Image (cartoon, rainbow, N blue to C red; front, side):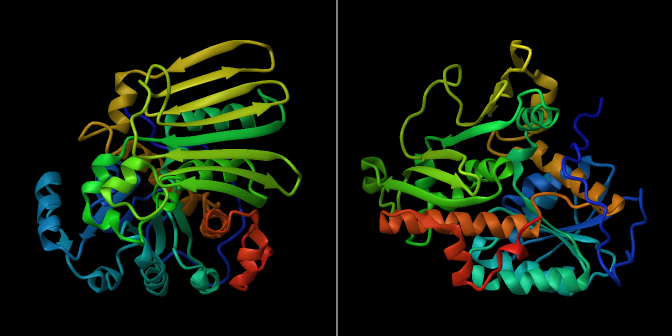
Length: 391
């Protein structure tokens, strides 16, 4: 039995790519040919592509040849290169999936677009909004799709929660709450995690923040407080590892997000590492991660808890316990393939990815100043018009 080969098209968009955007290869219904750049996190995408009928894995790439050899042996896939340019020059590749360090994303996306490729880029999308306008203009000029691999949206409970919400089972949204709490003290053993440039705000809180923007895309203002815990300070962490934020949307609805990363957590039977809670006019729901657990009270008053079994668990978590959630990558890759073949917009797209980075930077500034920050001020700082990043 094949599980979760595609995701609901929650936001179909039948607008054409634009003039001159006829596909040069991979006719509708045929497998798209994929190149993967960055084979750390890209490991999950290798697994996803090889398991999918919608993709043909063409080449994998990493600057470190040893990790190329490791992945080639692990997956029995010998076609690797250490040269991104070689992969870019391959005219048979339709899509490039990018899993490199954050500060390299913008240039890697740019080069893929210039070489006539569609793009999947892991979150957070870019770390420098000064490059946003160039990417927006280039994607439009080349007629190519850019999809942000915000994997949490594609986990089974989150998919079910969205489906129920869009079906009207909960009524209108009142407020949304999300968190990501994890004991990641092991992560601090990685030398680069102790550098000034590393922030849990982008590496961790981008997940629950994306949930907020999924349901409340027009966040106007954010206020947050953060601290460096005793555990984080002792390990040598430079930036906050414990944070709480309140958001206000343009229609005055509010939301909250929290993150804590260097202390013990509750047992999974009591609390989840990540949750998204919707409180609506006629019902409420909660999607939990990693537990494959979903709770809902719908407008009829029915209360239920849904759990998925081992077969679905094996789809999502394929190696190393729950550290590589390849099933989410499977789901979003197949969704993106459908968007190319059927010509609709896959979300989060380039615009939404940039909007989320603007919100994260507003959150960062609020931590620095101790004051509320308007997202519009961040966009204005980089000469980005709001209509450039709206759907």
